[in-house]
Image (cartoon, rainbow, N blue to C red; front, side, top):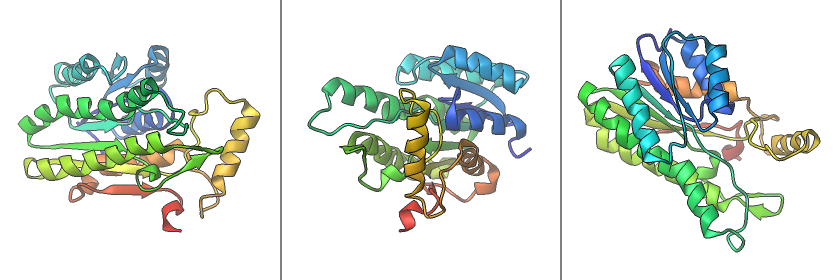
Amino acid sequence: MRLQDKVAIVTGAASGIGRSTAFLFAREGAQLVLNDIDAQGLEALMLQIAREGARTVAGNVADEGIARRLAQESISAFGRVDILVNNAGVHFVKDITEMTVEEWDRLMDINLKSMFLCCKHVIPHMLKQNKGAIVNLASISSFVGQEMNGASTFAYNVTKAGALQLTKSLATRYASDGIRVNCVCPGNVETNILKRATPAEVAEVWRQASRSEPIGRNAQPAEIADAILFLASDESSFVTGSPLIVDGGYLAR
């Protein structure tokens, strides 16, 4: 029960890493405020978690009203907010010469603006408590250039580099206030991010991806959730401003 009596907000909780994190946090004793743009997915998650008192706020956290509501819901329901997990995000593959301004703006909103807004509205409550832990989802893409199927992931990589720098900047700013800010940097994780692909195409993508990991396989969402739990819990009480790389050795090559 490493999160007993703690209140945690998790964005993008209806699937993938966010879903595994919500389940893990519930098992570890946390009171939960869960967010996703997928309202039906959130409802299904709540039924499966069956965590008494858990709350949901459906909507896009790139909307300041939704981000504000998340913080307010935590305070009104539980009187505090101890943990924020900024997990909501999408992948994107397209060369810079082909990407539209609208696509750029949407990606920056979902992957980076959402983190800014959630931090903006949660940190004031953590300051009053003189304690809190924020975990941002960055990536191995925070560190390297990448391509997929002959096109660049440059824009996605920019958002993840931003997540890393947001982590470091907030960590140094609020360390003396008892707020720790860290990020998890996963490698390839087998989630449902390839929503438009056929099952055969998905299997081939993951098979090819596993070749880039020295460990010889891709991660499962639960393995990333374990890393998030460490950074959210008091077990990492002297860790702040750090990227925790969980990539099967990808960046060690």
